[in-house]
Amino acid sequence: METAVARILNDLERRGGLKGSDLANIVNTSRPTVSRWKSGKASPPLATQTIIAELRYVVERLSDFYTPEETRLWLHAKHPLLNNERAIDLILTNRTEEVLAVIERLDAGAYL
View 1 (cartoon, helix red, strand yellow):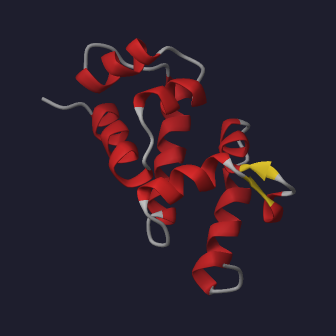
View 2 (view 1 turned 45 degrees about the vertical axis):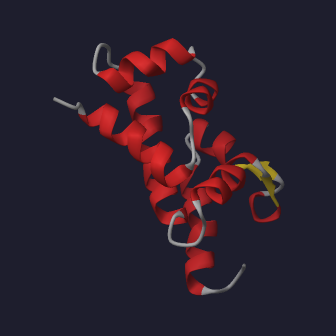
């Protein structure tokens, strides 16, 4: 049976273009560890699960505007509306709300 974490990781790959190596780099772990999470053989610590869940929500919102490949690039590129910081870095430092505010502007058509 697929675990909740495995479903989220698969969704991040499908909708966000994020591979296991991307996720390993994002949460500072190894690629084999992410593979174990995907297979249900292990589970990430709660703090990492929180990051993964927030990342999934951001990816879900971005998928309304971008392809998976574009979403992956958007997350890793510096953005002028994020003070030239990368969205992924903001998510890691518990500043997801700032990323979501920019996405809301996309949704409102205020910035493309």
